[in-house]
Image (cartoon, rainbow, N blue to C red; front, side, top):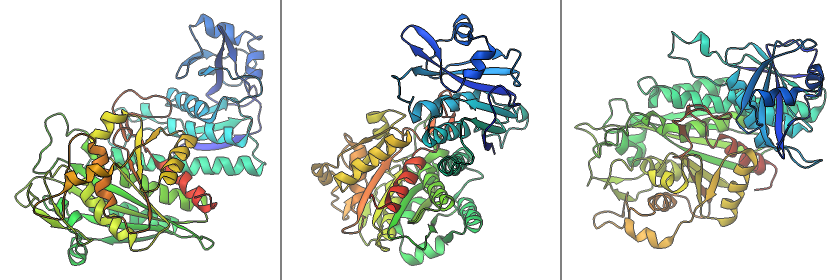
Length: 502
């Protein structure tokens, strides 16, 4: 785990393995960003010229290493691009700083300590740099023995220009550390192989974290689910040797006036069931529990920050496997709500487990429910692999979630719930089917889930199928593999709820 410190030391005097500075484009000229004045002085005011000679352009995502001159305690200077320099008096923006810090931390894998002399003019800037550096330093090496030492993440991040005695800076840094560490916890779970992460072991991890952070954890196993009539979760988990679980993890605050319920899809491995996925689509299906991981991480983060709101997480956990006991296309499940659902496609399983969890969460009458799921390939086709979709039964709430996501640096887009698509899920056999028309499939899935939300409860659905698992090269603070998508948005929504803004 990467350590974070706020340092009062100057860039020229702090001992570290590397000194991180920012550079930007101003017209056709490369300029050194604020915070690196002492470093530029050590280069006799020629740092930008030296970097240009080395081919640096100041573009976002760019990182250029060069040996430090005499006068600096660090042996290496790492210049990261910040893009276009802002107008006088304006800051670079939180997401620009977050991504630049993430790029620097990734580049410095294997280093013990790095001093970040990026432009920090406020507590928000400090939080962005801290968060980006801690997320960028992430590495999943639990199963790598040969190259494990070479891939050790940056051990310590020292923020220069921050004010360790200032309450606002201190609080911002503590929040950034809590959110980043819990987001990295979600990444660990998503990256864990499915032979080690399955419903029972996932539930045990939640229980252990509950003890550590004072959270109340309840776990319903197969017997309890059968007794309670959770036909959706049981139906999806029937084909697996390892049975399903429904986990409730709750954080409560004595001064809380509102309760936010978070529901996460936790399919620890999705083969598609009897409706088996085609070749080439199974290899990353350990990530189908990303929604549950995000919900779990957000609840723990809310606890660590001490938000004055009650946050309850519901993790619907199952393995979707084909076998002689698996649910078949054509089977009818009686859901926890009492509604019957004809299963036309066993690979549309996420909505089945979420439906039971949404009904259960509704029984506690929270002020709002947000479900999170890697639910549909249709959403990836619509929005790409970096943007999640937002659907809701309240337009203002959907807008508020979109704005909160934008504020914390997560890409999202509001999506509709067209009533005319609901008829496509009519079934001649049951109350409804788990599939509808193919076109607009992500919206059909949202309409299905809406059927299981308690009357009068504000509800939103986040389909994170695109950004939850990144298969390309790392960029900014985003690694290859599990990303922790939506954790920051959920935490921000919890904060807004605690402040009475939602």
